[in-house]
Length: 128
Image (cartoon, rainbow, N blue to C red; front, side):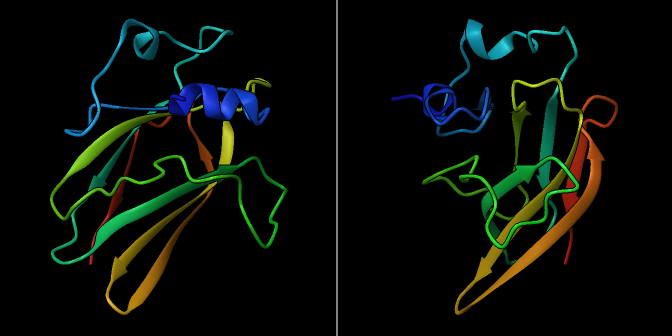
C-alpha cells in the first residue's frame, strides 16, 4: 500500500512523500490537488544532530491530543536532509497546524507550526 492510498483509505485525502532518497517520485506524485492549488511543502532539516522522525498536520482550530497519522511513516529526514510532501486533506483546506518531531536519543522534541498556509508557503525549516 502506498502512502497516498493509505491516507485515501483513512479518509484524510492525498498525503504523499516525494523526493526523499528512500522513495521515488511518480507521475501521480507530481500532480496538484483536485482544486489546482499546490500543497507541496519542502521540509528542511537544518539541525546538526536531530533527525525528523514524524510529520503530522491537521486543519485548525482542531488541536487534539493526537494528530492524524504520520505523513512519513517508517522514514526519517536526517540532519542536513530535506524532503517534499503534499499536505492535502481532500477538502480544500490550505491552513494546517503542523507538528514535526525530531529525535535525539533518548529525547524527542516537537516543532509546532500553527496556521501554516500550504497553498502560499512552500517550505518549513527546523534548526537547533
